[in-house]
Length: 314
Image 1 (cartoon, rainbow, N blue to C red):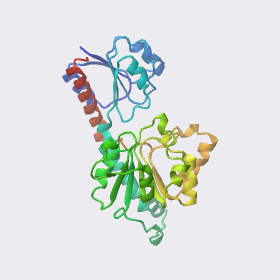
Image 2: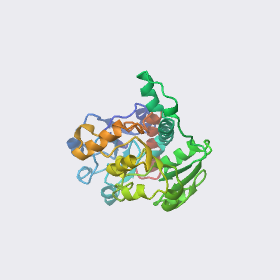
Image 3: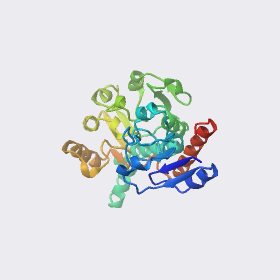
């Protein structure tokens, strides 16, 4: 019987799914990161969310480990190379929260372009401004989607009924781009897009992808969105282009440092600007965080574990 160590909180639906597959598990969401290395002895599977980084040191005593599964989207907290060297399978559950991300991104875009968040704050303060809150429509605009994996595709689908043109750029997997989006180069996207949304993973190559040169490359002012990872945006560059008007407004579900009580002096200055700007919408990394996605993530993980089992790898 395959034995799995689960070191983060997960939705209760996971347990009966594993039991139906004949999998045993040890659910230890309170385990401390420094205890995981020794705890992995004898386990064939590890399920993790965001508790810690999984490195070569973490798995050095894992004598039977066959897979590491992340109950979420993105694998940036896991050393994929270290697992590959040991022949340990690695997978995430991006498919589980892609609909949630697409819907949230749309909500943020509507809030940004139609001044919904700002208008809500003003009305609560008994300030009634109509002309000052006249917004813009998505319809008729070109939306540039950067990164066309599960999340980029989901955003494209929810936008497909808005009467806008969708263009997409993906430097790692351009072959994924298909209707309702059309594939373009980054240069063409920068030339034509009025709205730009990032859906790229955090990798060393993508660190500060959206930097000063990136924003300067757009022909006209843009609405900018990021629901992927905070580290892919140079936050200082974003602030400068918001100040100049090159970025008309920004919707951010993620920040370069989400531990807001540990900001450096520079990060604090940038955050203060973003948090006070009327043309910025902020949410606390919840784009993929719905009641439905919490369950769907488990379903995706279990299906992938089942595939390993059927392939004779467990």
